[in-house]
Length: 214
Ligand code: AP5
Ligand code: MG
Image 1: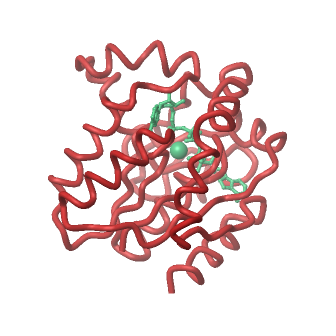
Image 2: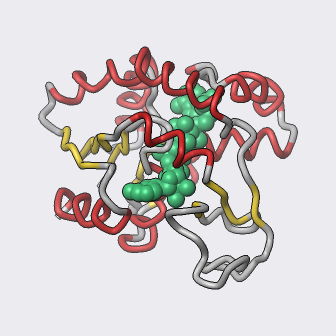
Image 3: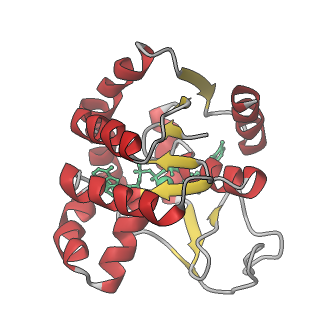
């Protein structure tokens, strides 16, 4: 099963994708995580992407679609994909169709996380992740069970994203409204869009997604 999680910055795409990985053995394909990895390793893609990401704007369609194609090639046909933060433009939506077809795959569900934008700034500015394994946390909504120790891998090192400041978040939201929200009708025409209340608690959102996926 291949699905897209769609929603503005801080909607909970990454949080829910990680939970789907654990519960269903699916694979999270986050273009944001891939780009941050490229920046960290100083690859040519990373060098191009860094400033664009720091401003909260979108990296080019070609770059992200190539990243997705390479990941799908590497991961094999028997594992379901969770597209997190991709596609984000009409061009990327077209590329995804083409890439999936070339791998003999097709989309089963597009799940839109519906959220209140004002609450998202608090979510994003309180976010941190494990520096070792990437598990996501939040100052208010999801602290590690033992303070200062990652639930998943036991690491005591955590990090925050450079684009998680209020000004950049506002740009990221504007980009979402202008370029990403308009791709929903492509999938609505196919009858594969479901909506989930992304303002509910993390567990409740997971339950709602489970009910859609069956
Ligand atoms: P990306 O990394 O994709 O960032 P984003 O879309 O802005 O989304 P976020 O990762 O900020 O939010 P999320 O929905 O994953 O929320 P999370 O689960 O962490 O992209 C970053 C940048 O890379 C872009 O700006 C762009 O420059 C570039 N880029 C990436 N993909 C691209 C593409 N396809 N094309 C072009 N450029 C691209 O949750 C947020 C916080 O809230 C967490 O702390 C979490 O614990 C908490 N939380 C989650 N759910 C809940 C809940 N239900 N209740 C309470 N708290 C919750
Ligand atoms: Mg994310």
